[in-house]
Image 1 (cartoon, rainbow, N blue to C red):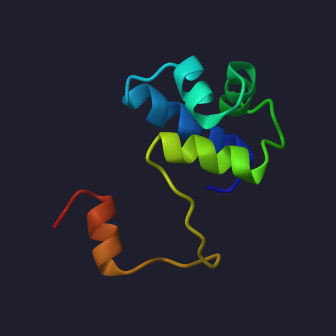
Image 2 (cartoon, rainbow, N blue to C red):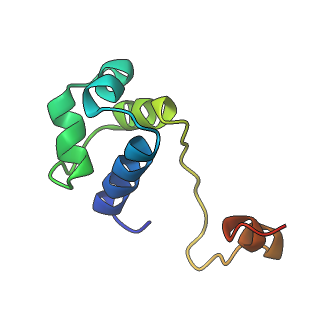
Image 3 (spheres, rainbow, N blue to C red):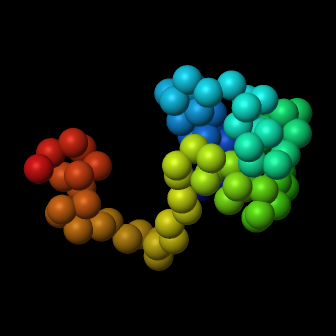
Length: 84
């Protein structure tokens, strides 16, 4: 992901994929439903690290950091594409 907007979109997709409502996720993460909604739609430019990590934890997600241009290993690529 290259932007905060893309991260919000990914969070929204994961939440919907889990069948969770914004209000439920927001409550569990300790933020307002309005904040989560604005974040998912790309209208919030600063959610704050603790709040972001709380939302990700509720959804079973985590942040990973890697150097730009890092292509990953062959095993990672296979896993990403659903292969063995």
